[in-house]
Image (tube, rainbow, N blue to C red; front, side, top):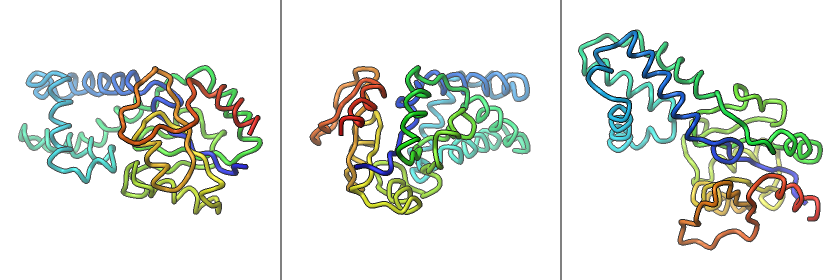
Length: 227
């Protein structure tokens, strides 16, 4: 019987892209007001491409997406011959908007039930946080890629969670949507996994898919009750 259940956040507990797009539009609107030289020169899509290029040349930033966005903003300040004393405020605007997520309908009911029987921990490569998305009451804690300087599928986050809860891999289950980050990451840590296919996404990995595949958390809960 499992003692610890780890949950991915983006696209497992809420749709990711609407939250990201809202946050990027919010900071773009802020810059249009406070730093119009930047938005006059670049569209929101061009700024997104520049940030991706930054990650390509500085791949270590992929482990801390907040630091990556701050670095991107600072690079814009340099490019436009500006001081960077506005960067912290701009990032705060983005970060606050990033936490405005719309939970899937099954999330609260299922987490409310599972927390009575299991220790729940959130694991994420991103920079959304349970403390700001209305989920703090359901999880014991969160581990992000920035906390361990390694993104899934590296096993570091899984190992940190197990260490903090003091359980073994055989006591642990991971629930996530991404074939590589979540399912392969769990395997790298030696733990079982469940693949959540909310969007009927294809299995785009050369590895064998997990036996347990569900379209929502209600199916997960039903399976756990039978296990």
